[in-house]
Length: 304
Image (cartoon, rainbow, N blue to C red; front, side):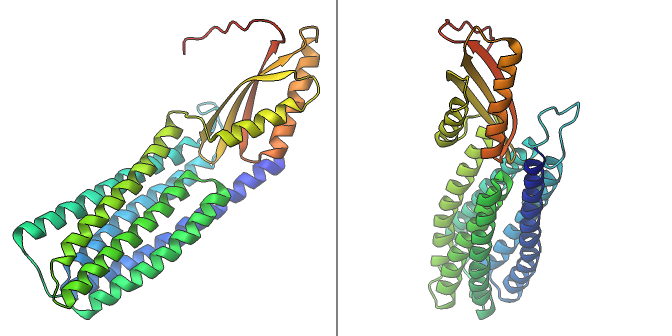
C-alpha cells in the first residue's frame, strides 16, 4: 500500500514537471508570436499568439488540478480529489473548442471582407519555430501522460498537437501570402479549425466520461476480473464496476463465495483479493468488495 502511494506521488510530481515545462515554453512562444505578428504585419501569426494565451490559462488550470488531485482523501472527499483532473480536462476541452470557433470565425470574416495583407519574413519564421517546438512538446507530454495515466496531461498533450496543427495552417497561410497567394491564409486556417474541433470533442468526451463515472477500457476490467478469480475461495466475479478519479481507479467487486464460509473467512479472502489487485495494478486507489453466496439468485436492492 505504501509503495502504491509513493508511486502515485511520483506520478503527480512527474506530471507537474511536464506541465511546468510546457507552461514556460508556451510563455516564450506567445511573446515571440505576438511580436512577430505585430512587427511582421501578419494577423494570422498575431492571432496564433493570442491563441497561445488561452493555452496558458488551460495549463494553469491543469497545474491547479494536479495540486488538488494529489491531496489524500478526507472526511468531505472520501474517494480523494482526483475528479479535479477530469474537471480541468473538461475545461481545457472547452478552451480548445472555443479556439477552433474563433479561428473559423476569423477565417470566414477575412474571406468575406477580402482583408488580405502582405506579411514579413519574420512571421514565416515564427510559424516554423512554433510547429517544431509544439510538436516536440506534444510528443514529450503525451509520453508522460501515458506513463502517469493523467487525464489532465492527456488533455494538455492534445492541446500541444492542436497548436502544431494551427501553426501548420498559419505557415501555409503566411507563406502563401508572402509569395502572393493571399487567399491561402483564411482557407488553411478554416480547414485547421475543423481538426481542432475534432481534438476538442475527443477531449470533451473523455473528460465527460470520467466525470459521469463511465467504465474504463474493457481490457482493464478483464484483467482485474481474472486477477480476483485466481484467488482461492473466489468461485467467480459476479460484477465489476470501475470508475476513474484522476490518475486513480476505484473498483467495486461482487464476488461469489461458498455460502458455508464464515464472515471472517469471507473477509480474509476479500483481503487477499485486495492485496493481489493492489500489487498488480498500481493505479487502483480503492477497492470495495461485496460477497454473495454462490449458486443463489442475486436480488440486489438499488435505486440505480
